[in-house]
Amino acid sequence: MFKVGLTGGIGCGKSTVSDLFKRHAVPIIDADEIAHTLVEPNSPALKQITTCFGKDCLSTAGYLNRTKLREIIFNQPQKKVQLEAIMHPLIYAEIEQQVQSLSSAYCIIAIPLLIETQMQASVDHILVVDCTEMEQIKRVQLRDQIKRVQLRDQINTQQINAIIHSQVSRERRLTEADSIINNNQDCTQLALQVRNLHHKFLKETA
Image (cartoon, rainbow, N blue to C red):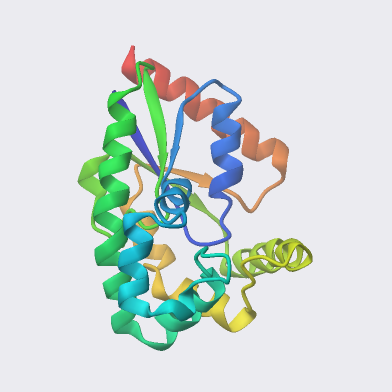
């Protein structure tokens, strides 16, 4: 199984690119979706997080309060390290288990923190979705407007900037890339880039 690690900074458009690959019937393994599943109420991971961060990180219904958790880890950097120590091994173990169940020529593994966690060797090809920092901020703010309407997972501009600067630099990410998707352009150009890469990966795995 040829594993393509899809990564990029917050707001660069990784989900959009994943959806475009999905239209070509490419299996998508999403680390963020796995992380959400791992912290469902009464799950072992959520119990570890509650022990580490306290019950303030839970909603009244027993769900993870992501807004509160985000505030904690960006105000207390050591807590971020503790959270990663809990979540990252579980996430990568589940990714590997899902990969083993596939039979396609290749798969996309969307891992926002692929480089930050130094797990580049876990994939065969690193695909970076790239855009300017201005575009990142604009897209996350737009996404947040929708979430505010839904009263879920709110994030402010200060937190957006904190997340951007907690991740590896754009330059470092591009240096690590085997392929780059430029997401400063329109949707048509984005879809064309994905289609071209899809054909490239099929040829490489034939």
